[in-house]
Length: 253
Image (tube, rainbow, N blue to C red; front, side, top):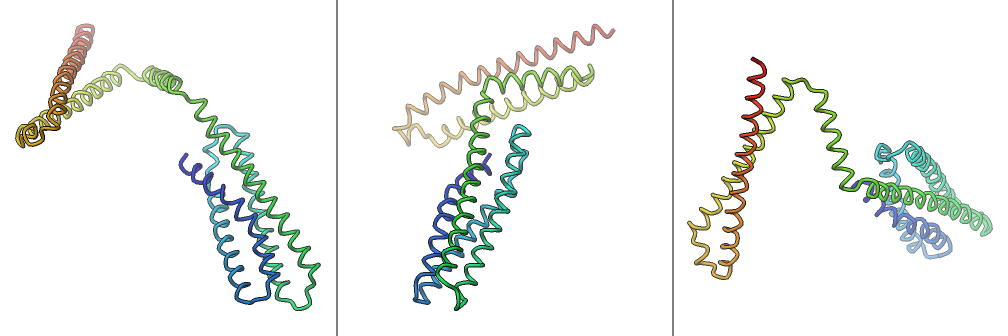
């Protein structure tokens, strides 16, 4: 999703670049001072490079991010149309540059070329807006279709389906693995809590930082309840595992 957001942000500037591109170039054609013309063409070249970068990013955006085949086909079609239109847009700019350097070029020919350039620019702007709309729709659809409850329910159902495919040996190994991870995780929590208490007492933070004394006391009280909860959960899980192992042992005799 981060890549889609980046494309959306940069494409907001894309319409501005294209809309001003033809205008700046037309201005370069009308001015007589050589230096001003060079500066305008340089500005046009910088905008072309920025546009090239955006077109490249849109081209490299993976269509697998879309949730349905219709959206994938739409996006692929937009990409192809954008690349084709942008090639024509750049060709029209080169054509205008060549006409500018020709001494026998009339104002009517230049105006005609500018009109064609504007049409190509408007076509590209429309395609970019369509891509923006498609990407926004996909983001909204993703956020709307995947609420927390549905995600948790799907995760639960997938977990049950996975368990139904395992043998008894695999289920036993998985149960022991999960219990081991759970106990190890809580042991690390206990170590961090006790180590934190040791540091507070060792450096006498309550005396050195009287303003924080109330928060330190509150932390100690909460950590005490947290330790009780951890020990309760660990003992409960271990007793449950012992009971399950006893059942397996006696029923296998």
